[in-house]
Length: 609
Image (tube, rainbow, N blue to C red; front, side, top):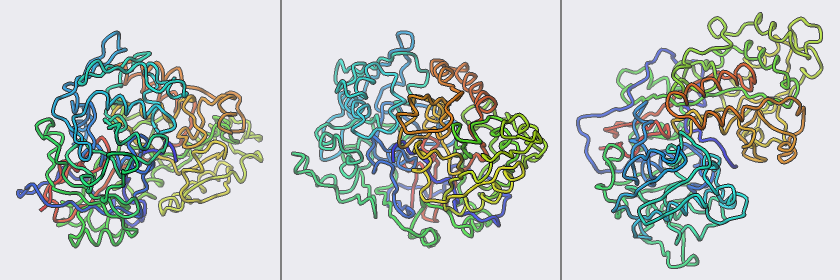
């Protein structure tokens, strides 16, 4: 499905309430004295790869896929050092010689490419600026499945390609093989961050052209520019599209095997960004999380992308001998209950405010496993994105346990409180469709949500489906409320928490992430099939545009004000959890590092025995 948010592993989707809570977050790096290069890193992958665009970089929007791309397979003009916390969100040069500053009043970005960077087999040639332009043209073309092209819509000529009126982006030029110039229609202080996203990595036209108009097809023959490549790429025949066959190292249902890229030159890279310590990385699908963690404990696997069974989480978080293999880091992610502004009774801001006051957020976090999982969320963007808002809590209640008195006070302003006693007593408040998933954590949250809402007169008709995302991100389904919503940053800029989620111009008929339909117009509603009360839908489009154009400290202040506007004047969510990311490693792992960009393991820095 399109524009599916990169979720990653937000630890313990099957976590029980019995997990011991008092556990300190481990350091992001675990290292023994015997770190050596070589060996194979074996990673278990629960159920299936579940890639959002079949691992095609143009449309792939899964965080765990991005971690593989940026650490192991793909280089971009600018990137990251793949470390934890603040340093992991700092842009550094990758293919480009520097992280450029814009010129022409913030409208022009010029990138100069390093020499010596080559494509892996079977292409075996130098990367040029034309390869990056081709990747951008492909991202702009809706027929190629791009899922986050909205981040680049400000490039001059982008809209023409997106509308099918042009084949190439007029605002992207390549004056020579080592220079690419990008012209914007208006300033964007975070544009360099967008150029670190995987879809902008260079693509060789001689291979990628074979998959044009086939979203998700350029995956098994993905041509690498970083330290590793898909096993078997050296045997692929790229003499023609007809001769092209999938590399042996990738089967979306069973495995992804990576080996060293013989055309990679470490001298063109930085060891601060990629040490490339292991000789190979094997990702293996296993439908049983219990089996995966048994294999990790036995040393048959080294780590996993998987939910963590409650007993395993408790064992590793409390055992003094195992804590060195228990790694927990900030997920830069907010989990929330989303309310649809077009559907009764949530078309009334007073109802939305009342729900924020009544929900016991501490109990919601407990349903996920307690403080081991994360902390109570009090607004939209996590503190890591807007540090000055760390203590902002517009719906504060004692212990974050909810307040009936405050909820009733908020409800009294609602048209659905016909008795004016603080209760949602109109018929629209009864048997409201509530869409959830079948995960254990949803089952654990449901009694909290149901009981709290009932205190202010709202009752629900529960529909549990799996996966729930296609249901809630299709506007024509008119889902009033759901708890199956979470969002993590796309890159270290607050824009990635506001543009995709609240810009009324980015609403899609399928794969829509603006579940609340903030800013939807009647014309947009007709386009995507949404129905309901479309009168007086608030919009923050103008504020988003204002913040996008700013830079530096003013940018963060602007987004902090936007967060406040959304939480008090729009109220599309009940945020309840800022989650951590937890990984467990085997005794084979001699060095573990966390990558803040993808919120995944920093595979480029990990070492094994």
